Image (tube, rainbow, N blue to C red; front, top):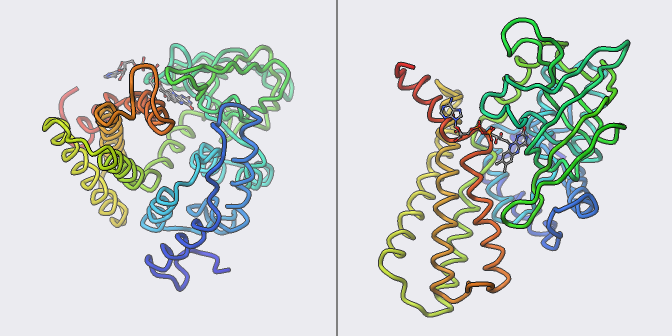
Length: 384
Ligand SMILES: Cc1cc2nc3c(=O)[nH]c(=O)nc-3n(C[C@H](O)[C@H](O)[C@H](O)COP(=O)(O)OP(=O)(O)OC[C@H]3O[C@@H](n4cnc5c(N)ncnc54)[C@H](O)[C@@H]3O)c2cc1C
């Protein structure tokens, strides 16, 4: 197999390859990802992706990736969503922890964790937020005190997506108390099966346990599990969040697919929508097409002048589309009769589960207010 994506391949050739492979292999019958048992099918799917060279196309070749450029990565995402591919269970390590290890980890750490990340033999979650440290992350208080070759961890994380089916967490912990609050933080890899770790799922409005709290009580973790050096975690974390930049993670296709579903529901019900709903439909469609063009343009630019601000714009655009799209769908599905008080078709109920989740889009991955602060600060240069 060609090792990198671009070796001898045009973007169209890459798209055709992916469309054919996904058409044959994408599973459509995985259960909701509600617990560890349900994760088995998702792990098997990730192994299949890894065997075919598709698990982490953006990773360098020496670590099992395909060195995909940003446009190639965007095409991957578009085709994955077009094929209706399932949630990527190990996205936190493929996007964040893996690239962080490549940049800051020792050779031993890379050998220990990267191959198992690529094949999802070990699934990871991100333990940054705490009850009193969200946007103001540097206020985190989970403590790790050195005793011999171990760090002893005490404290709590919250809103940890997927902790209830993960095996490991990459956590930010406080290893020093001197100086400004973003000093004395360390990036620590913790096996969730270590004695003293307790994971408690949090059930959301849509009835599903998307995330969890993690409690640490005298948890002993080898000091060798610190990545990037003791007390250097803030620098490591800021670099890690930079790896999330770029537009190749979320494509317009998932939104267009959902608008098409609504269009079919309207056609088969044979109803005439209120003009206000029709207008909203048109506006959401226009936003989705604008997002398509925006992501294509940004992906094609070699380097952005303001990469952090570009990613802030991107987050604002997709999260607002998400909220508006699912609100629109609720109105449409009521008009078509697919959704009624106290019930609806299976597809309409699935829509409502996503409707509730869409509200969170303005909060996770950095709240929209924080994104606006970044744009005000870095691009508009407004006074603080
Ligand atoms: C679905 C979901 C999944 C998540 N997954 C994870 C995960 O896997 N791992 C993890 O570590 N965390 C995760 N989080 C947590 C997420 O990162 C935090 O919720 C987010 O950073 C906001 O922090 P907070 O909830 O403490 O709110 P706060 O930071 O307390 O914010 C409260 C309000 O104040 C506003 N605000 C705060 N500071 C400012 C400011 N300087 N200027 C203007 N407005 C401001 C915010 O925008 C918000 O509206 C997840 C959250 C959600 C909803």
